[in-house]
Image 1: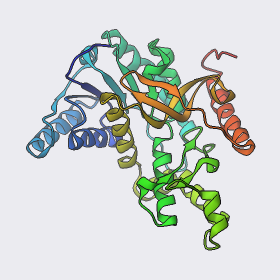
Image 2 (image 1 turned 90 degrees about the vertical axis):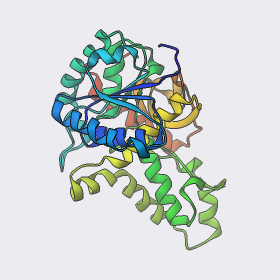
Image 3 (image 1 turned 60 degrees about the horizontal axis):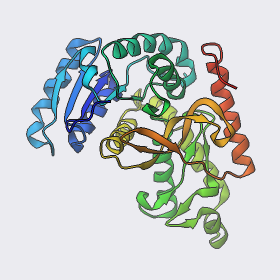
Image 4 (image 1 turned 135 degrees about the vertical axis):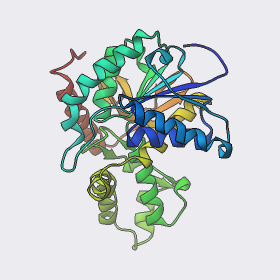
Length: 319
């Protein structure tokens, strides 16, 4: 990976998620250069024009242009948002076959450019496609990252903050596992300003365990509700991607629940799945292995098993 002061981000896929990510990057001044690649050249060029017209109001002058895969050679991050979208009534895992074919071509084109940076994957099913990106690219596992459960964790923290009446910044908790139907809340580590949620339930009878069960259901099913109402989700995931991008470029060593490769952590091997990881300039350099309770361990094992069952027909998994 090149060592220089100018950070170049290449966005592949200028659909709802991709264009929202581009808009967020520019508004937050996260990157120095932004290249947009899309099969629909007119759409991508239109986005570039539209984004550049607001440059006078941006916090940082991001050089933005419509590009080709050759531009990936000097990129620090290639963010992949291309692929088939999730339709109403369709699960993220239903998208596997279509998007594996698309990704094989995309990753091949990127690597042919001489790219040696970090892949950031957003396309669903994100855990499967992040694993595929790692396999297709041949890059070290820490330099291939998926958005994972960063958005799910943000939704969780927001709903916890609403329930307990505090700022979202002070509501702490993780959603881990598959970014999908088998994800799980780590209630054993959830806290409000350092006070465990379990303690709050004991202290005040207005807080009820059944309310928290419903709260998690709203986290898990949020995408389905949004898709039903407006056809797609994109603002939240775009902000999650921007957060990961900022952590990389600023070498924050931030702990984010990205889709990262497990090599024995949490008792699992050779699977990409949403877990807390330390994210900085080298990518997801280390997994933060939480001490889960027995219920959470079983739920996580089940979630990893679902992903492995999808991967096995396509890749040779390590034991």
